[in-house]
Image (cartoon, rainbow, N blue to C red; front, side):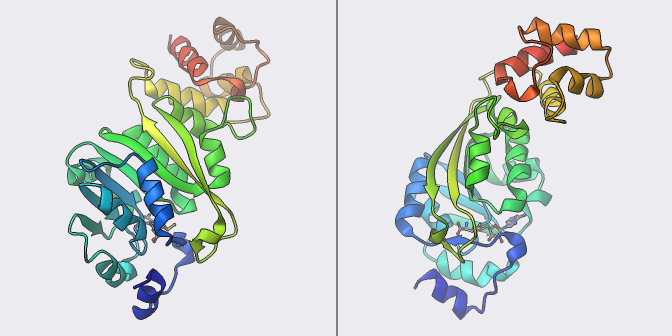
Amino acid sequence: MQLKDVLILNGFKFNKRYGQNFLTDKNLLSSIVEKAGVGKDDTVLEIGSGGGTLTSAIAERAKRVVGFEIDKNLEPVLKTTLADFPNAEIIFKDIMKADMTEIEEILGGEYRVVANLPYYITTPILMKFVEEGSKVRSICVTVQDEVAQRLCAQPGSAEYGAITAGIDVVGNAKKIMKIDRKMFYPVPNVDSAVVNIEIDRKKYEGVDLKAYRDLVRAAFSSRRKTLVNNIINSYKIPRQDAERAVEAIGKDIMVRGETLSTKDFVRLSEILKK
Ligand code: SAM
């Protein structure tokens, strides 16, 4: 049975608030899971299982898939669509209300995240797993194309922001495909893209991540201001000290935060700590 029929049969009503736009094309779903690097020994966390189409594509390749779904109205739908997948289980809970220890205990070891994310939780979800996930190997997310561009942006570009630098310090983000809006049911008013983030906690081994994130937040706190002015405001230090720190990484005192690379932020955060 097609997903649309299962939804109708169960009298399911879409809830816009939860960003419910489902993917149904089997080839597309299978290609996402393949590009996410999911293999037969993997445990996968899926965020937002919807009608279970991505869940079943994951279950076909992985050892186990655990889905978190906020909308309990999807329970009868998921019972039907996942009936043939004993390695798939759904937890009806708001992922934002589950703490990382609880999530990682359920998963039981290393895992990959695969999700077609609702727009309203994209940034908090990514930051949650990038910052707090201790056993996450990769995060493959379908997001609005505009967000995908931000996740993979280069320093100095308009799309480059705190989230780009926040991810790049512990991983490598790559846009792996574009998805036309027509592939979703119901059709949203923007196109999407899939981004895969391979987590690499050794990329900047030894860096104080809290100090790094404090600096990134400060650097992007006001895009109209120079990096020096943003540092003065956030760190409450004399102008001379802020200028000296920026010059110590080989940058002009008039530079703006959004031109700094991850490496620059790492070096500057170490200097500011002192
Ligand atoms: N994975 C399905 C697919 O690809 O067709 C559904 C994707 S749909 C874009 C997002 C799903 O996330 C919806 O089913 C929605 O109910 C669910 N969702 C929204 N907010 C959530 C939250 N805070 N925690 C868990 N699931 C959530």
